[in-house]
Amino acid sequence: MEDIKQYWFVIRELTGREIKRKYARSYLGILWSVLSPLLYMLVMTLVFSTMFKRKIQNFPLYYLSGYLFYNMFCQVSQSVMTVLVDNRNLLLRVKVPKNVFVLSRCYTALVNFGFSLLAFFPLLFLSGVKPSITMLLFPIDIILCMLFGLGVGYMLSIVYVFFADVKYLYTVFLTMLMYLSAIFYPIEQVPTAMQVVIYNNPVYDFMLFARDCMVYNTFPSADIWARIIIWGIASYLLGYLIFLRRENEVMQHI
Image 1 (cartoon, rainbow, N blue to C red):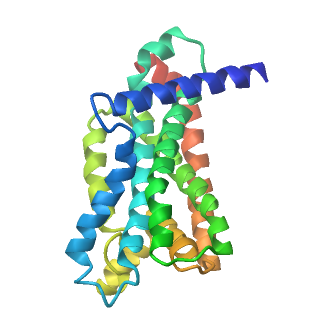
Image 2: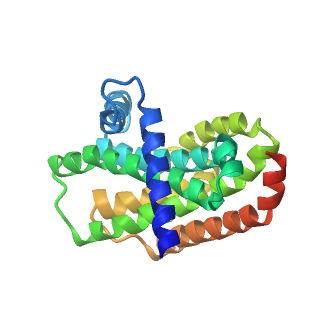
Image 3: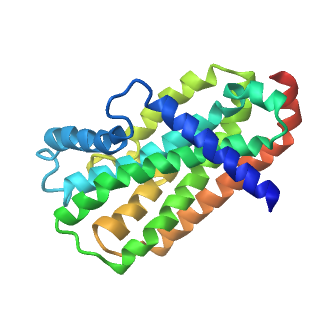
């Protein structure tokens, strides 16, 4: 228990450092976590709401719910990818489990996601969406999406130690992923072959779950339940096992 308390203290300190560094020299600071999704939503609504107004019910919420989960996945996987290299000095000097640094990045992404919800929930109820029992499923979606991003981040963190260029390739991949996640368009609007690709996109499953339980007040189908559980748990276990197996080799390299 003493070790857990110490590790939790380290995670909180590292999280505070990450948040301060992210918003350093910014007058609005953490408020940007609330304003950023709203500004993106405003732009996308102005651009696409007319184009898809007969296809998407409540477009602003449709977009925002998708964007929040896409952004959380990006933050978790990208920040965990560089965690070992960014903290090489501390890893060599301090006897702390490497997983503590990984969890601090994950916790930071969760805190930022929480601030983003300060924009999502008021908009949800201002748009006429009534509280529903299905909303109680929302935390499950958040946890499984974070596990999925964490698993991907674990694998990328090992690759990044040996191949730094993966950071730039992954940025390109995330841009492609955004357009393949149906964040701002209805999936029915794209060709059948593209629909198959989108349906097999894990990030889209987490978005779809959130839209069902939060925006449309419906229970997600059994298929969506199975997919997000499998993607979340399988990705985490695979990533963590790879991380543990290559741990010593990574320390010798950095």
